[in-house]
Length: 196
Image (cartoon, rainbow, N blue to C red; front, side, top):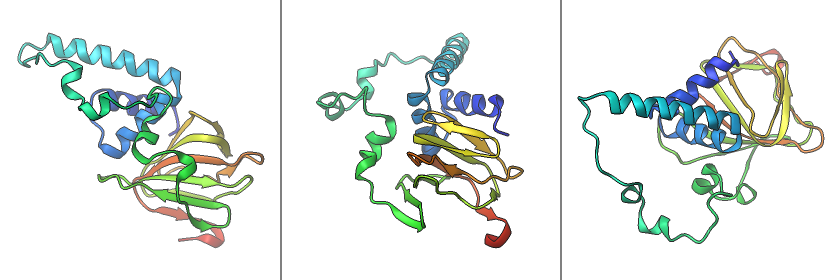
């Protein structure tokens, strides 16, 4: 399931405004970290914009971008180009108060309301998650470090999207560990001695 088509579908849904809050934050963070995905998003936005302009039944507003931005945002002194979309919402990653789930595996649940639960996962160097799958889709975006599983190695800016058919055992990089942004649509299903 982790192919180009499903990744492109996420980018297209983002460009068209079809995603909820959590998946929009996930997608915008992916686009911030991955130049190739960001270029594809620009292409999709251009195609969708052209399509909208060709539709004579849809009135086009005379809004300017500055009409949609509050004065508070306009006057911020931070260099917003260096601050990713996720950090703008939750703050710097190094200030997060992690909750230990098991040895070497910590998580932080964001307070984003919506259909999907957006979490940060931090895995210590060499830590692994037991063999598992999901009742629905699982979205993983590497923010720092890297991990590998049965399907490949994933580094900063890489995305993995799994469905219920995929079983995997993620293992964090031996040197750096990893921090990932994740969404799981349904419960995790463990196998072996950790079976749910």
